[in-house]
Amino acid sequence: MISLICHNEAETTAFGHAFAKILGPGDFVGLDGDLGAGKTFLSKAIIHALGVDDYVTSPSYTIVNEYQGLYKVNHFDVYRIDDIDEMYEIGYEEYFFSDGICLVEWSKMVEELLPDEHFKISLKMGEDFNTRVIEIQGSSKRLEDKLEAFYEDFRH
Ligand SMILES: Nc1ncnc2c1ncn2[C@@H]1O[C@H](COP(=O)(O)OP(=O)(O)OP(=O)(O)O)[C@@H](O)[C@H]1O
Ligand SMILES: [Mg+2]
Image (cartoon, rainbow, N blue to C red):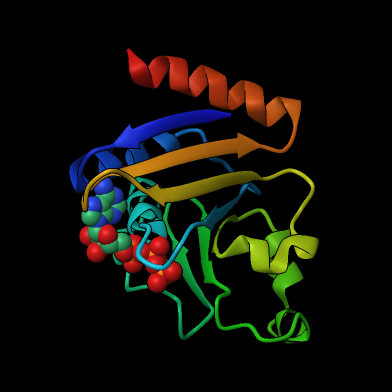
């Protein structure tokens, strides 16, 4: 697990840009944290860094927005899913188990559907209005090793 503090939007953006570089085809990232914690803000930075220039907006009403950058990128917000069946109705498997990259806000609401291998990003409000505490976990040794190596690099 890695943990860091971003003191303002620019630091979160820079972190998102750097983190995006470790993502590749088939990778899955769940993002959790309270309303306004910065899930969409960080997703946007990651998606831009994946070569998407036409990022539209938060998928909170559409559930999923699809982009084409270096890879296919699927940005989900499952906050408005009332019943897990709705995930089957939108054919979530076609996205979660594809060779695109998935970013899923409020992933804990669909915990039982997540691929075994995934990153989890948790965002929390920090000491002041613009500070965020970000934690990232990899669900496997492979992803944890990748994260550690990335963070070692990022800090220097
Ligand atoms: N350091 C920071 N990192 C990220 N966002 C920040 C930071 N400082 C201020 N903000 C602001 O916090 C807000 C985060 O909103 P955002 O929509 O990303 O939250 P969210 O977690 O996606 O919420 P929701 O659950 O409603 O989707 C944005 O308005 C952003 O500008
Ligand atoms: Mg959001």
